[in-house]
Image (cartoon, rainbow, N blue to C red):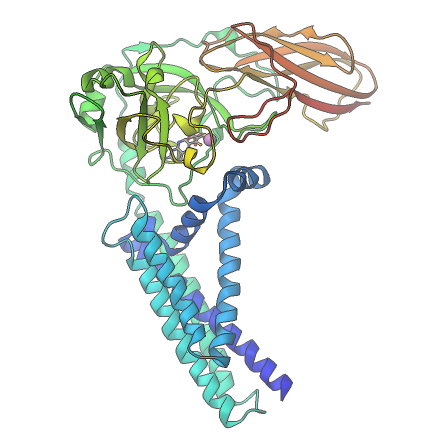
Length: 512
Ligand SMILES: Nc1nc2c(c(=O)[nH]1)N[C@H]1C(S)=C(S)[C@@H](COP(=O)(O)O)O[C@H]1N2
Ligand SMILES: [Mo]
């Protein structure tokens, strides 16, 4: 009797999972057709990202690097399947509680999808379909199981049981096919990517030259300009927003004398500037790679704000992304002499979709989370006393000036180095301040000045190198930078939260 009940529980758990897979698959398919960013999966995942504490984001990034989204999706899938299995068992033992749980998941999806910043009337549809299909399928399969369980409690292999098993199998297969189909539909409907490939960028009126001596050309050293394909990516978007330039517009409003609305055609008709700037994430650990440098093409934000005329009491611009992300940038950083851009190009191409196509912000001197809004649609001129950005409300600092830092790229930690003459090399930065020197210390020796490459500008990182006559044995190498204003990098280790990591990069290696 106990083992019969256990095997019925197993069948019920399987039926619960099958109902959930069928619901999720059809929900994903619905999303792909009518509401691409409202995938039930992405909606629940996005909700989890939004409520995660700051250390949660940090932990995810340090564990999974830029793969943190894939890891999050796998985690959500496992969690949902476990809940669905439990709901199946509960539905067999205490109906209708299993249905209530499955339906509850659907309701959570519907509510979250309606409260996302980019929500429209169709946004709740995918989660509604997913929830309804899961509830109905689960109820039918398990009612069948219950009827036969009551009629013949000891018969765990009878035809009805086999029926339930077979129908569960079919539900899983159909659900999986629907999920695969949704991926295909999405692939075919990459509207933004087709528009992007057809786009021609305007030629810049002014350009920041890249001196040949900015690139030391050392094997293993990060190139001074990062190819877009290798550029780190950090954002809260589980589904990358697809924005068509022909429907894009930017609204500048809030504490301004004149509200300004700018279309794509307006934007590309303005004189374009191409600058080189290093973008770095506040979550970058000492020695980390959440940093890159690109040639950015765009219009100085200063010129646009000049048209809107911020009022005297404004001190911050809250930029809004189409997906609800916001960044709080000091008004001054957008109106002073620096090259703060509303960017449309990266390394000579339209922005890659994941890097903000068609328009993003790039502001030298500030971490990305307070300045580099991708898929930007609104500049709200306001005050720090009144509004706050996405990460500020999650415990990160309201202002995020980039801290002085340096990194060793060559040799790699754990690399095999043979005794004799070799090279130590890396990069150093404090964007919009500049770097005047880098020193290297080997073991407990004296700090030796490294050779600096020619800096492109104070807005970019600079490469450095030092010849080293490596002797066999174990060695520790560390580096520290000095800024253009004479500050030397502190040895004091600080974690990224709440306003950026500090400390010296260091590696230990064995020379053969
Ligand atoms: N819309 C949007 N823009 C965003 C973010 C985001 O989550 N959503 N993240 C910011 C952060 S934290 C960083 S570090 C940079 C990263 O830009 P990248 O992905 O192009 O390297 O984008 C910024 N812009
Ligand atoms: Mo970031």
